[in-house]
Amino acid sequence: MKYAVSNIALTPHEHADELIQLREVGLDGIEVAPSRAWKDTWHGLSAPEIDVYRRQIEAAGLETVGLHSLLFDRPDLALCETAGQRRGLMEFFVHLSAVCRDLGGRTLIWGGGRRRGKIPEDEAGDVAVTFFGELTDRIADHGTVFCIEPLAPGDTDFLNSVIDCQKIVHRVGSPSLKIQIDVKALAANGELSADVFARVAPDLVHVHANEPGFGTLGSSGEVDHAAAGEFLRKLRYDDFVSIEQKQLDADDPIGPIGQSASVLREAY
Image (cartoon, rainbow, N blue to C red; front, side):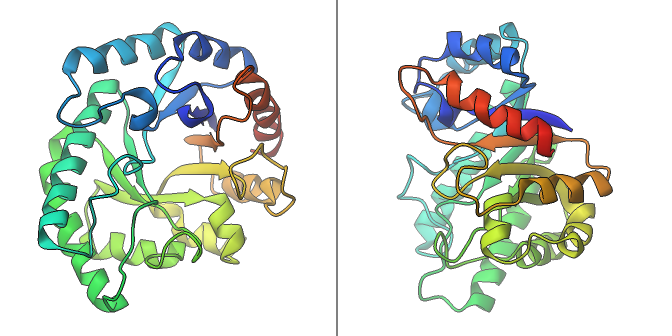
């Protein structure tokens, strides 16, 4: 497996020097939350700004994994509310796919900001299938992959189970739509098991190693990272596992990342 960390653990917008230190704690890649890299992630984001960030990543000897935390700065966009919000979401996701491509990344993880509200679950599922069918057609030549991320009921009211996420992926039937596993969500949902990992294996392209509250790995005692690593090894999973934790020490951002990286290497 390859090891990465999200840039939400780094100083927002100014972390070129911190990127260089990530190799020193044994990490291979960086996963990019767009709002953590740029103050404007859509219409004001220029090609030169994207290129500068890519050069910083490559100069640090890292690989860009992809994007996540896609809607952190765009809470106005939604799948299951108005048609206008859904059109905006489509255009933003197509834009982010191109950003991911231009950074040299592959995966885009959609978890947060996904709600169905008063819409029945079956109807919301149909909306999602139609939406992703169009989205995957539009990004087919980008070489990117959108991943639906399971989340616990406390985080979303739509597509909690990894198996429910997989059903949407199979209905769409596109190589540009796959599954990402969020280990804390699997633990919360009672899905951290060998059977679930085996079932989702054909569609699995990315993994988040994380904790409730996004602290250092192992800090909550609620997530069995050793078991998750064992299940992944049985699947011969050899892609990225990304640490997803918030910035825990503004004076020393790398220290807590190093603690998690040690757990990551041991468990995964």
